[in-house]
Length: 393
Image 1 (spheres, helix red, strand yellow):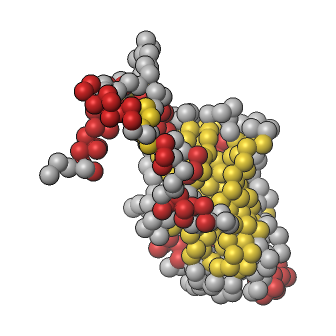
Image 2 (image 1 turned 60 degrees about the horizontal axis):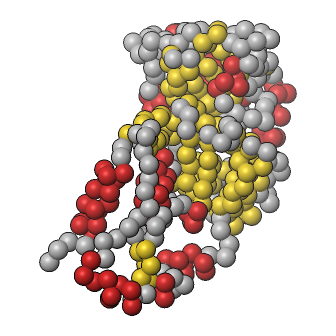
Image 3 (image 1 turned 180 degrees about the horizontal axis):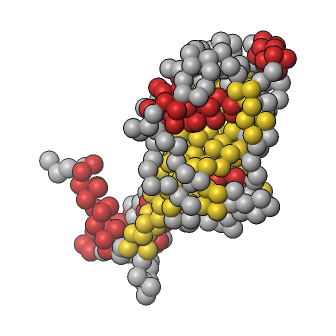
């Protein structure tokens, strides 16, 4: 997302600041500059999120220059500062990001109810004055514009406000729109040859031959694949919050993620390599576990994935979300990236009572670490795991 913004020009949804806003230990006049910009973007006529990139110099017709900043701001301090000055709280966020090897600041301002104005004078700003962003400049809204803002807000009273984020499904926690993960990539020595699995039958040869057990000759290969996927794939779930006072119905989120020529992958749970067995009883091959039965009974998954023309398409389905409710996906998908950097999840929210789709982004910041191991070390890890699961009496 940030890379895309660098190629855009300043507008009613984008501004570039070469230096960090004065905030800590700054006076009212200095801090009012930050306050003014947030108010102006909040009141702007726009359909998408607005962004302020801090530590970036605009280049018209090309990629803007990333200068970086030396000091970061704290999101919670900014939230308290801004919302204590205005007549109605607004939704926005500040986060730190890294690009071109340096740190920058990013302020994201989604669409809020308008107009927004100060309760009393602050610095160079006047109370009851509606500041608005027009193109690349900031101005004071006219009475007609303010009246239209109120009318627009009134017409949107029956429109739900939906927030879509990553989630921790097990703990029922809504995460941020931007998360950080570490992908561990299993690497074996270059000369590794993975042998077929063999069992030492010994004195029990007759019993073994008369039993129904079958040796899994691919056991070692399957074991390595299992640990490779276990280390690089990360479970991923989503949730949607209804921030409005009306219900949202028949919600569908369409996500698109660039597969990056195979470097970015998604799997459903049933496609992950399960921990293999060294041998098995072929009489029981078709006997499903309780978890497998439960999975088979889930006829209506709420996350669907498919790869089309090097683009991952992920559909997330919700039925109804009540006012003030947060709903979590029942399914979990697994995400991996073999490249470090920021992965964009471009999504659109559709719902029966949304007049038009809401288009935003989630991002995953990926860090790569190599896990150098051998077949013998992985066998030892598995053996120790089995000892914990089945301790000797």
